[in-house]
Image (cartoon, rainbow, N blue to C red; front, side):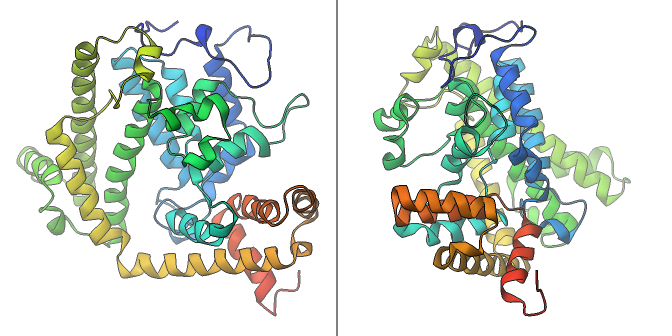
Length: 383
């Protein structure tokens, strides 16, 4: 077993699964979680779900799947340096976006607006719903029956209303406590990955430029170093060299800052971690400022770029039209989803009916959502 710190998550001391299972023979409980996630349907669908650019816009842009793999790689490297549980970190990283809608944040926002009067839609909560309920792979239980610690890490955000439905898992949101260190770590590995790789994709798409990025201190610092060391390399190689150095700078700062906080806090167990009033895995104050500056740049120059905005506007319209069509007439749903919608409508009324429709739409890939929209609203699409 990895040389774990006393405050790391220990698979032999897990809080267990919702349905008891015999312990695995040749792998840890968290390895089993990771393996189940990799083999589930929701994970495969991430290959065709948007990160920033719709999947068909280019073969080299990142998808939810490639993003999740990158988060797992960054997370494992940090976990190893901090003597935290690598397998748990990887499981959380690979599953963290599994409940995301098609079309990225635009799809999430549209579906949340549609579900506003039906208990809302939260993609982290939906990820847990997919893994706890909607995946149908095992004879003895619904979902994947993951450990408490993996489920805790996946649930990065949760409303008070939904937290009350989750028993022990929701308590930290009600009591303002912290998740385990692996969950905290996976959250920041996600941030490191999407900020830096969105820079890469934005440059590749020509929506932002190296000249613009000179105003971002984290980028400028590494740009000057690379320009001095390698003045004659191609622009593509230069960009890659800068971004990998930015990631290394963020990762190094996070490791050093976390080590300092672990020592100062005096934690000696995962229970001590959960009782803290703020996360212990975080950047230094200087790096928080630099990271925020990068986020603000991307929000201003990439995420609201007119070409991205046109795509997100179309995406929202697709999601909204699909939702209202299916909610109005659930007979439009494919047979399996129609049967589920009937049952949920009978048991929970309009909220159940809407939830069944949201489950179906959230599970779609980008291209499947476009095809369903065409089938319903394009007169030339007859099937």
